[in-house]
Length: 383
Ligand code: SF4
Ligand code: SF4
Image (tube, rainbow, N blue to C red):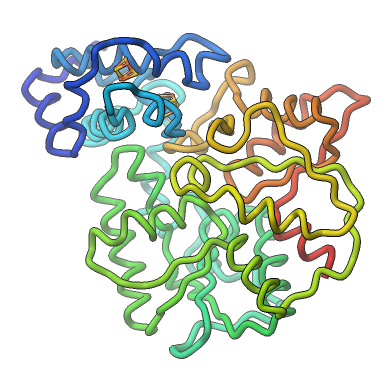
């Protein structure tokens, strides 16, 4: 099947969605040089932009779905083109016509799960708070200090539930009066928006905003950089006003205010991975590092690609939901970079990164070992 969307429609859709800057592209190819895909296989954002300029985009091509929205090309384009916005606009056409080619197919069932249960993992809405059973976690009530917005992966994924439990443990230890929304919490909608489903994003955002307003929420702490990005930079489109704080920033604040003491040692060689949506998208680089540097015995080293040049794990832009063949996984390269600097622990703070890196560790040699941890798990271990 070859589906070429009509020229006018392609160009109009990109413009309507704020991707008008694509017309400034002069085809220098810098985006392709910096794109992580070209470390594992050929992929050309430059070519996608070129096709779109002439309205010649074939919406059934898998290439349209490769971009992980890591933002490296946006930060490096000499003409100020916003490749992510243009690329997402193209995906909107795919989503509109329900065209999810090849490996992208699973997004259809994610759409169904988000629509019926408010999460991307086919979990039941009623079980969203199950992770907190047996822990001292209350339901949020107006007047509490913070809402802990757990997010889909930390609510349902067995590995990530351990991170939610570590986070609750830290908040309790610091005496924070916090609560969760449980089944009234819905996916933040960030990734499905980048996968082109704007209507579903809006629906999820409105559900969350309604729950925030009904419960008098003023300050939200989040564990996922995707929730952080959405609340901070996308929800203001709905004219709402609440404070959002990322967990590593919040924990640093608790330590600085003397509410948490990092008493124990963590005598290991650690390297920190900057998630794209925390680093490049939101400029949070220093707080997590400063927090780790306060842990006694912890030896922090930097990987080859760090901070602004951090190598994407491959999970953004909805790619966490699709099958990426082993030879195409950037996370394999990242895990290798961690081993190469002698790290025993690769620490980060994103559910997508942790999921992808954990998978990639299976490919390490028998004499190599690397533990993948969330930053909250290290903090909890030293309290
Ligand atoms: S870096 Fe910018 S100007 Fe150069 S090809 Fe890519 S989008 Fe076009
Ligand atoms: S945002 Fe990242 S993955 Fe997407 S085209 Fe740009 S560099 Fe490549």
